Image (cartoon, rainbow, N blue to C red; front, top):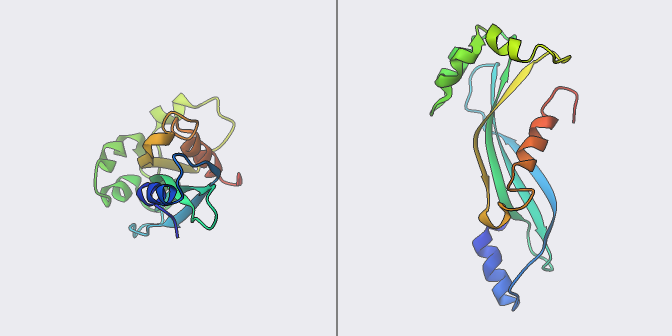
Amino acid sequence: MSLSLAALADLAEEEGRCTVDLFSPRVRFRSVGLSDLDACLDWFAELTMTVDIDDADDVVVGSLDFTLIRLGTEDPIALCLDQFDGDHEMLAGLFDGNQLAEQVEEQYETLAVITEVVLIPNIAFVTEPLRATIWGRGWWPRRFIGCCRPGSC
């Protein structure tokens, strides 16, 4: 089980501490499973860190809700995007059937990698005390996106 920041603040106060150190960042993933189509995979990730208080649970310091679009499946991507709440349908113009649209591909024609998956971040959050650190400047979502490439992690 993970602590919230409010619970961590209470624990630190009980210990008579004004500050705590956080270390050992880890990302935990879980499938949300809202999509009925093979082309769309919706996921949720939490960034947790260990606290320097004995027997304290890890604390959640960030989260990322995201959708993975698998290209080349039987499902048209526009149909896939249409099943989600929010602004996903605005992205339909980036795709042609079950592939990236030609104008998108042309922007990346120097890539030596064949694109098989597109990651769409829906909501990214990092707790306020960490926003001025490497964690808050987008390192962990970028690191995670790097791990989503086929065969990379």
